[in-house]
Length: 254
Ligand code: PEP
Image (cartoon, rainbow, N blue to C red; front, side):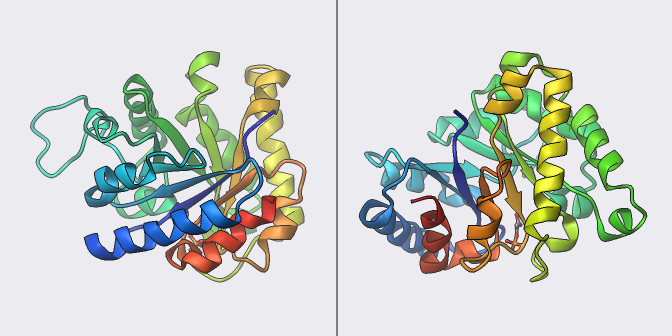
């Protein structure tokens, strides 16, 4: 059975103290309120990772993730952080291919394929994001775009490597906009992604792949989205910065 996961993406928010304080609240709420088997992942800026991992010790339902990693193993890349460094903090996950990285930092499918390889080589589990822009959806290109992102970003992996991934469908037009994909729109794409995985690898691998939905997910809409048969949880931006909202989304799986 595939894992149910709710991951928070803090983006470039919260200073060191604020991050630790929010994470402590999340830990307490997960401990007191989460009764299901869902996994909670908090993806913070690099500066928090080591401390969050220490705080999460002993809480098996909570994991920590980074939001990016460099494609090279090490070297003269001033200001960058490698997958090995991230892993050395005890961090388990890394978001790759977020639309903000694609849009503002020019990350292409080709680059993301390299980042995925390096992350996996260093025992990080990528949360690999894919999704179409509004313009692409309006031009009815969304299925082709998703297929291309999969083929060029992750379908070079062998079956064992692919099985370590979590995928996140994040329609760009729904990220941070307050506009959510309808549960039918999201389910349609999630099923499409699962079918693509089945054709490329196997039905078993497709059935075991966790596919998250991301885009203006909140405590009010999470229930309907997560009830869809091919939606296995969420990648949560804005609402992950408020412990109450984030945990209420996680509680959808209780
Ligand atoms: C995200 O950035 O991954 C995201 C889904 O953001 P938001 O929930 O704020 O739309």
